[in-house]
Length: 260
Image (tube, rainbow, N blue to C red; front, top):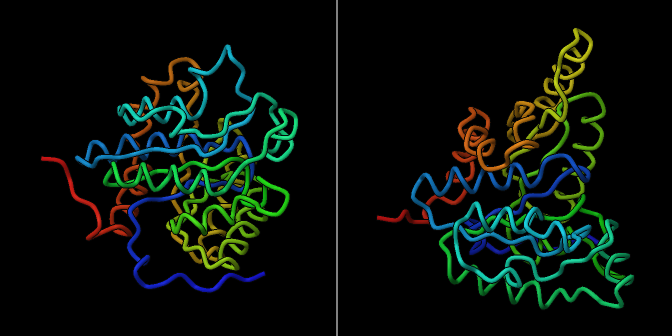
């Protein structure tokens, strides 16, 4: 069902929601690098990963929520940064059921409002794509809409990226969720002539058809697998991430202030 258009007082939001065309395309990387860029601009940034699955006890410090919190450098409780954490690496609805739990939208929104009151700007990272079910009747797009945040969509820069990106953008428009940019990420090195042609075709066609700003391609970053902190510092300095941060600041102009 189509949702009515957001009211004018939400036209300059104090945050963004990082979503994606699929799982594993680089949401956490983009979200963390964006946080780093905004902090370097003197902005107080709060972070949130409302739901995370596939988090075992042994890798809690490497979870998406933990990495976002560390990047932001704040002391917000992890229970606020990531209200719902599940062990099974499946969709939130299934992961919650496996533990006999239910995700409550009201809990997420209440926590989000608490964090938003503490920080100048919020960066929120989703889970999977926008139609991933989080309850029996609600999916991630419903959460984005309820948070009244514009979206940044992360997708693949190579072959197969066009269809996923256009479907995601169409679904967001159908929910009247504004999109700041489509960020195209290199998930593997582009070494062959065919791979370069495929990537260039994806980028060119999306620039013509997407109807939103295109950022990227973000460079393949193998350093992230070896040293997250060092790799993130370099990644945040890349031209595409600088462009994305500027787009975000332009979208939020007049609603955020920098630290002294």
